[in-house]
Length: 407
Image (cartoon, rainbow, N blue to C red; front, side, top):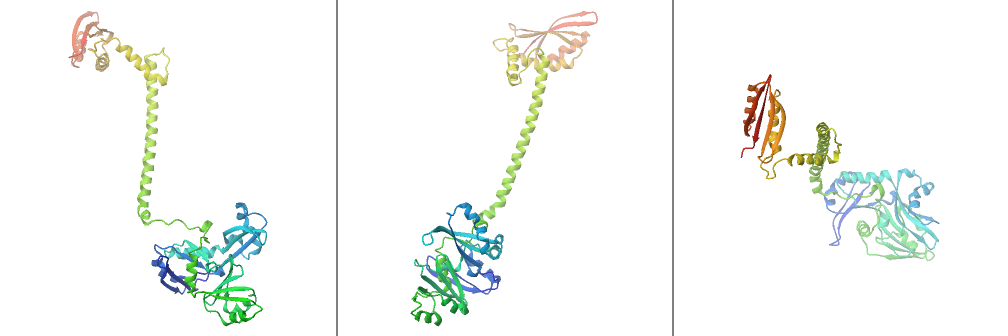
């Protein structure tokens, strides 16, 4: 691919396992990328970028490249670049020490951010997920010797690799000018050479050694070498994201909805807990007030209030018979509504007889009829009631009742 949207795009599908081309072709521009979508599904995709769109720089420095220095590299190169560095993407390939130059080096590839972004965007629009982008010149075979070059005919010119981090694309019209600097070199060529280079090789002064390699289709040669490259132009903000599985895309709405429901449930639980806490505080306050009203002379300890109440219950329960035949608290719970209903009847005395397991009650009523109604109401609760002496003293009637539990 190149920055020119209408430039031809050669492509192929290569099988590593079978070591063969499955299908290949050439598009007439980026508008035809849709035809490659079906080939890209389930396969790793590598884009080989036109060398004219990617500049390779070997930056030398006396300082050892640290993380801070690498971050500052764009500003160090600002004077050597024609474009604003904010518009450029910098991808670092390798750092090390150059023994010949006695300096540290950093290999950097520079490409316009807009160009790179447009490549990724148009490929994504056609459902083509890209894992690697490599400059085409780095996809030619590399020799260990600095004096060795690699050449292949491509489109309307020649792609030439001149070293580990150096190369160029020469249009056919400019080949003669380039050939003038070819001396003391070994040229490995993978496609037929033009007569011009043959003439240069025939010149003994040039000392140009031509080495014929097995001829290969240019795209096949680039694809095979690209598969061996671990470096990637896609770094930083352009780093490829991990692919999302189709199963995740299907289940993601359900999982998101489930997460939302869990959050709502959690919020509701928190709200209910807070509401219960508020009710508990109100109930605790009311209980303290009731306890203070019942026992005004006692010091209240809120944290020990339950224990204090239990001690009061135990104190009351201690007055009942040891054999447990009389449930004092249950009887009092039964009688309390009767006491509240008969406001005119005043209970003057309550005494429990542990030996006889009975509660003796003394009360004052305004009339004999009212006292009798009171006795009948107590009897109707299911308790056993034995009336005692009833005396009429002027305007009031006093009487007693002996109360037992029914067995």
